[in-house]
Amino acid sequence: MTLNEICKPENLVYKKTSLLTDKVMHYCPGCGHGTIHRALMEVVDEMGLQDKTIGVAPVGCSVLAYDYMNVDMQEAAHGRAPALATAIKRLMPEKFVFTYQGDGDLAAIGTAETIHCCNRGEPILMIFVNNAIYGMTGGQMAPTTLEGMKTATSPYGRDVHKVGWPLRITEMIAPLNGVWSVSRHTVHTPAAVQKLKRAIKKGIEDSMAHKGTCFIEVCSSCNSGWKLSPVDANKWMAEHVLEYFVPGDIKVDGQMVR
View 1: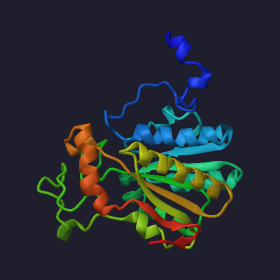
View 2: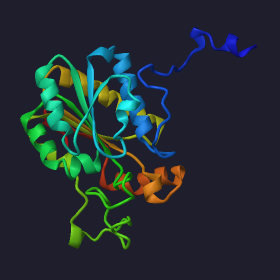
View 3: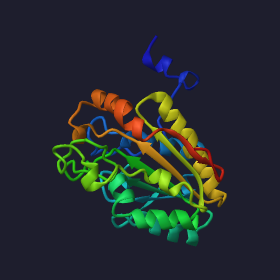
View 4: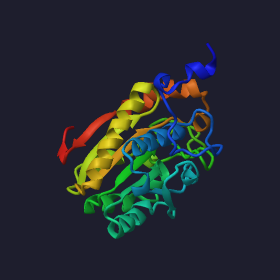
């Protein structure tokens, strides 16, 4: 049997979404950003929302996210994605608007923007990629860097008595009245990616229904910053990162569940 005979439409189990471009990615091998991009665009594609979607890209590793997602995108100043998304959504309330931000952009320079956007209940979906380190700028300590974790600026490990504890900003914003749903996910296994896709779909539906801000944290490995192979980075994340940043639902339909 030839390849053409095998690759018939009825035999096609999985098809690449047309909402991802063919540009060569700049992400390091093993980085979770590509998987998260794919999960997000697959859901947008499955829901038929390409022409109704507007994304806001940040400053950080995913600064070029607009190169890979075949939807309308806008670039924001560092940490200001929620403010820009607020303006877009208020001007075009019928659109699905999302921000895509890392731990530096959302939980450091953009902390105030994040908190006030959530407190206002802006009906957008915020996707927060947490790899516990500043990957793009050389592996410095981030607000989410774990206690004792070594980075370029904490070579002896994070000392919580000097710089504070790893910031669980997801749990911080969950109790705010304007926040409709909050969950934490990963992309280190196929099953985890499927859970993320379901959360994205619900976040899209709820934000487009103007129920409030929907917030999804995605724990992702940074094998180059962590100085580990992609396989070992996934193992390290499962054994260490997910013990502190526990996956699962935190707030569902406006109600705290943990």
